[in-house]
Image 1: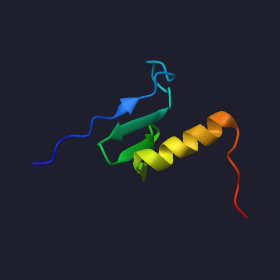
Image 2: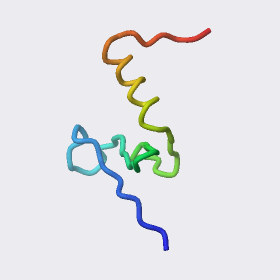
Image 3: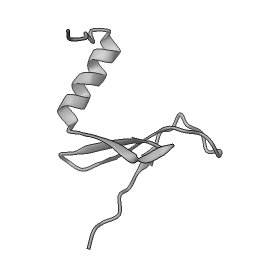
Length: 66
């Protein structure tokens, strides 16, 4: 039997109707993200690459590749 996903909504989205936001569910090794407007489209990653991306965004060191 599959365990239901426990999607968590961004705290920035508010609680009303039409507040589109990013939702997240995670295990120890996998993080899944989706936009609440299109819940069938998901981005899957692991904690380390996501942490590196967020750190680069936060510090302004994110660079594009050619």
